[in-house]
Length: 405
Image (cartoon, rainbow, N blue to C red; front, side, top):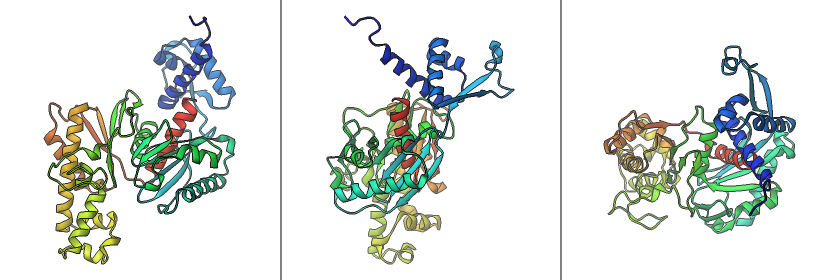
């Protein structure tokens, strides 16, 4: 039998993590409100908050005169919040289009960022180049190394986050490599890796412009497609690396074979940016009448920017291809909603810059939802940002190396 008091250090550490999480999500916040939300005693809150203040991580300040939260209890209104520049985290996203790196403070404010084309080389060379880019970013920021919490790296594909291993991705020369370990050795700061859709969801949870519900789905439409789930403030990761891979749900059983998973008619093969580009390139190569021939004389050089430009100009071919892709995206999203009924779905996708694509996605989704009305499910589109994934990586680093430390 465990002796009484043996677990006190562990309990203290857990309490501090809970308090930091509450301050992070709801701060500025009073000690009394923290105690109420966590069902902890005021002395426990005071002891932990005092420790955080002494370490320079949080600070107290008088609440606004209009704040009646503490006045109603007859106390001097005092709020607690994090010292935003006490620590910094670095986020990285590597995808088929670019590598993005950023440094954020504890409030999610950007200190410095950089992006550049995807790296092409051997694994060791790419690891060295990535580490050098991160070192250069840190040096350019002027932030002391002791303030750097760590690095969060987002990668498309199957990621074993706990092991730090990338099982399968578009970067085939990185497959089955322990990226977290190899990058940690080069940087001498802790590194974690995660699927890039899941880190985007983590970033939205922590840095979103509005307070999010404790459960939501994050629908990422990019080169691939994914839909990670956050349930009761915890990311659903499952026992393997494939959780949230909505892109490989079959939506057209007689559809084309997916070059990634090998199955016929999966969502990614019908509606991802990769699939849309493939269809547009094939049409141009076949001599179809479309303004894409003027925008891209060489179909191999075609980008989604070209496709979106043609769609916004009402190019008949591109509009038809996009309408079909968004139809499949809506059907798939309706299936996800029917299965798990999240109160909120956040949609992140470059093609959703076009308003007609947003309208069509909503129409197709609502057409196939069962048993729910518009008031029971919110679908929110976020603006496209090339640093969203990198910001998510920094958010996950803060969560792992600061809040849960």
